[in-house]
Length: 244
Image (cartoon, rainbow, N blue to C red; front, top):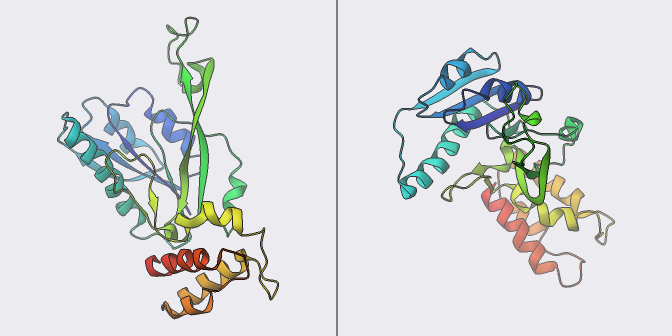
């Protein structure tokens, strides 16, 4: 199952295009409407992929309250969407003006806990500044800038996402996914004395925890044959087990 979640406000012009776009990959979508004053909510509720909404009626313009409202709204819509989700279900958090280009086959990889995607900003130029929206937001601009951010767009429920920092765009992952960047580097480069890779061990740990519901497995994996990495490996895996 692939589930889309978004927080929006006054996006009546483009929200149908947005929901159509992400509906290519998402089986269902949940929307947090942040006190829209246009027809955004009406369009959202009529869309076939939208199965749940949260309607905030009070807008907070003050910067401090706005920061608080943004991260709590993302947390709220995720909690609603994940209530009946399975451990391995994928979630995609997106903003109304974002569009993706990727091969969804990558989401079939069982070893992935989250997927970062490179986010570019389109530039308004002299030649397209007066261009009118025609139903496809990607046709509004001709150029994007060289700068980018690598953003967590897709993440599984088992990665335990939370939004705890004010105005935070992407979730913090406290499950194994929170260690994934480090594991990506280590997993297939080093072998242990019995020939197993770190990827094998991670899979074994996850299976053990799901079956036994205990952190005793920690003792089995805190020593490695990687020079200078045994303490780091032990602490990283311990952190994962503790927060699983």
